[in-house]
Length: 236
Length: 236
DNA sequence: CAGTGGTCTAGACCACTGA
DNA sequence: CAGTGGTCTAGACCACTGT
Image 1 (spheres, each protein chain N blue to C red):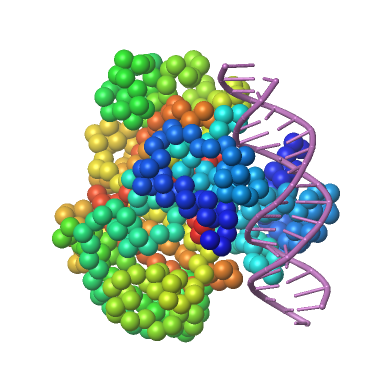
Image 2 (spheres, rainbow over the protein chains, first blue to last red):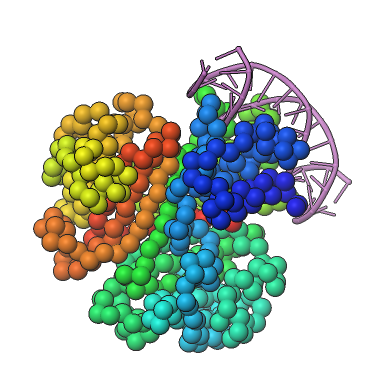
């Protein structure tokens, strides 16, 4: 393992996700962990603080660190995760239909969202996510053409994120999500099985690379009864 | 200031929120900050990492730390904030109507949400939030009676959080939010100015104290066109 | 009281950036 | 090359919990 503290973090995150460590279990103390991993206490603390931030454990001064019962089956959860990650983790039957995949000049709205001039081309990918036989989500992705290598149908059918991060070495550093409830468009009605719903849950996702450049804007349009978003927050 | 690193964090968070530090401004290097604050570099790093986590700055190895243009006027934002905090920060005209304030035995649903037996009493507070003359949000709070001191109307009219945290010394450590879109109930229709909308955005909020006990469950029901939730996420 | 986590220090080496 | 942030160490003192 490269990073010691990331190694410790992964060890415990995995054990908690798998259920090997039950909620309310007390973790070894920081000094014990430092000895176990033959490292310093500050390094152990980095790992434990990461676990605490992500909702795996809770630390109490004078007592110790304890496994939380909060994190369990709560996906999709706040953060940077692709549809494939979520669907797979939840064990869903899913399918992706690529509606279109092309390089276009962005409309005024998309250009402004990506902070581009309307003459800069973007990759435009429209996809429908089908879960249990129903078309639930309409994903409209826009990626800066100047940054992204040529995309293919098979990439989009799988996961664009996975392709960019693993095959190429894209370093995605952070993202901003804005969640609203919008009236369904005619496009929504024709692309999704809306079952009479007149509204959709919209997640607008702005993704940034490590050098602080915005490179992707995504609009995810969900059928309302299938939408669910979980946020875990800690006091500063 | 008690904590050095929290002091540094506040200094820069304030400057960025006020706009004294413009986006893309380069912060002093960690070594410079350590000298400026007469502390060690690790302490400075704690402050900068907090700023980065909360979306104020972005750090690039070999280059430095830079102010982000992401955080600005994006409330309500992910995290632990009360309605009063949000409304005040956004400069809104707001009013709170307390519909009811009583100690009751919880129904089966609320009892299960609070992990209580149905015989344990809870404080039940129903409030309507009015913004710009329209009733936009219906807040249904349930607090464990065994934990919370007597509540009064004037407390509920202001902010329960503020009262618990400042006047008493309640230490709120973390919270889990679940956001969904639900069909509007007859209660929603009678309490809110729904303008014909048939759905509401529902935020279910589970609040925990420092000893890891759940003490509050809140259901916030928003008129869809006035609902907006922002999430900022960083890669692990 | 001994044990816990929270903060802090003064060093060290590394990988990365820009000139 | 010097400067940056990322990781790590081996100590230290504190505030808090339980016994």
